[in-house]
Length: 321
Image 1 (tube, rainbow, N blue to C red):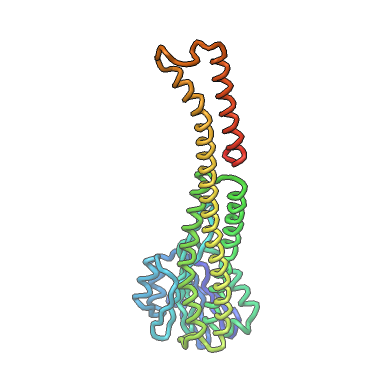
Image 2 (cartoon, rainbow, N blue to C red; image 1 turned 60 degrees about the vertical axis):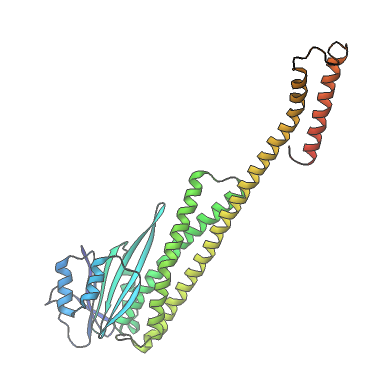
């Protein structure tokens, strides 16, 4: 557990840092508190529950740690769940951010993949005209930061997919590379499954009349929605590229197998001629023509060479060899 931040603001200005306790969270009129917790303990959650009267269903979601992005309204308070994502070597790691937004508080509780929100607070503190709007602008700043963190993940995925596409055209994929393609496909499907609910959350924040969200703040959430749509569009393009890589790899493999089959069939046809002739003369009959003829043996060899040569030339012209 980590208490990342517990700051009190008023009129766009940082006033003081307070302890996470009932006494520390007592606020004066016009003030709001920004609290950030990572993997909080039950005792820390109890302080927030008792001080801000958080709804039991929302707290149940916080403790479950397995929620898709969503927005819920409990009286005069918003409960927002967002998902974080980060690449770790060869796979994606996921996390959750649970946010409670009221008139006098912005509570941010994080699980799984976490990141430093100090730059977000510092940016807001540097623009008091935004911060003075209150907790709704804190919600926008965090959501915008989360969505922007998706972009490097998509960039890296694009680089990997395009490199794999080029390799598919240059050479046949190995078993490990095929497994990597399937892993990338699964990751993109999970990613897009997460982005859908995230877009619903930002759409509601932009268009719905919600408590603790001022009308002046709605255009800012439209900007977050635009970023999400761009990320989703890029992921859709990646999915198409992945599908084309699979299709091209399959076609090339079929072509290779067909080429091998034609080559084997051509050589089998060529070898069938001497095999047939040798089989005939290998039969144990006493009276067979050409057996005692002086030129029989070289004539048969010449016949075999001519037929096999003719077949070789024919298969070569048809590109079977």
